[in-house]
Length: 397
Image (cartoon, helix red, strand yellow):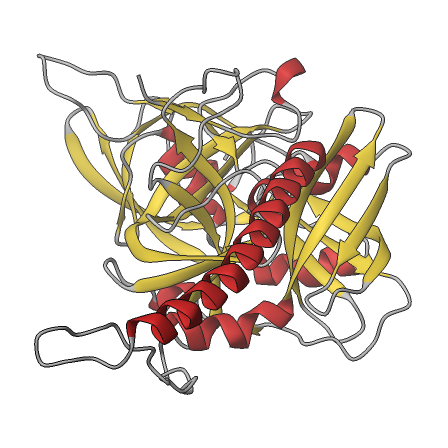
């Protein structure tokens, strides 16, 4: 049976919300896999040498081909440059801008991925990757060239599951190129890079399967939902990919790999791997927050000032929309004339299917933006212009 799971660093002792972020991989397990792979490579190399020697001897004994008997030839092929826009070319371009992040803390240890933002070591990753180090823990960053550095957290944003860290005493790094997630289309080819299960510099590819998919990965300490309008992809994303980039075939970062849907647990009880349902946070949604986090400030988000629930199904028909359950006095929603019981069905051109959809959509705007809210009241469809406010004073939406 499939289930949608959030993959926090250490799921054994944490509740399981509807989705699970692609958790930091477990270093011990990753180390074992790496060790097995290394052993396989050594054996394979030895077998290759022996095989080459045996081939030469066989060739000497077999003699030259005859008209009735042909033998295999060894091709002399060149390592040709990667075609522009190929996965090979994208990997070569982006890998120097992706890091592995190892985390230790009172709650355990794990690993994830990150995206280099500046040449002096500012790195974008997921909140759930670094939160284990929040209380007396430590961060270590591994770069593409094999070097390592300690790091510290500059700022985190649980509501978008993002964080910015600073690698210490580094320079000359290769910053990633930031793209525009607004220009991403369904069916477009994308590449994911990260450290699944601790295997750093892993490259996978696929397509964009869906856009603006509301993904709920839990809530913060105040009970505010962490929901974002995700880019869905079938590129393989696994525990440890969290915080790594999803890029287009120009090598531009369009999303941050963050959560996956799994098919349940494996025989060992650990979460199963990728089934082609991965989710990335659109880069457009978080770049305005990066400057706040880098400065150690609390990021702010847009809100309407309402508490919402999902519309109830009636007459055996599925009802779309988010029902307004409460309105904060003096909020943007109240000033726009919205009332308790109104069912929001659209914000600008985005259809609202449920409460998560409304929260994710509103957070994709910035405080001060004006949006057109379509809603139904007593069966009549109406619209209202709402100037979104800041969540400096928190509410549900």
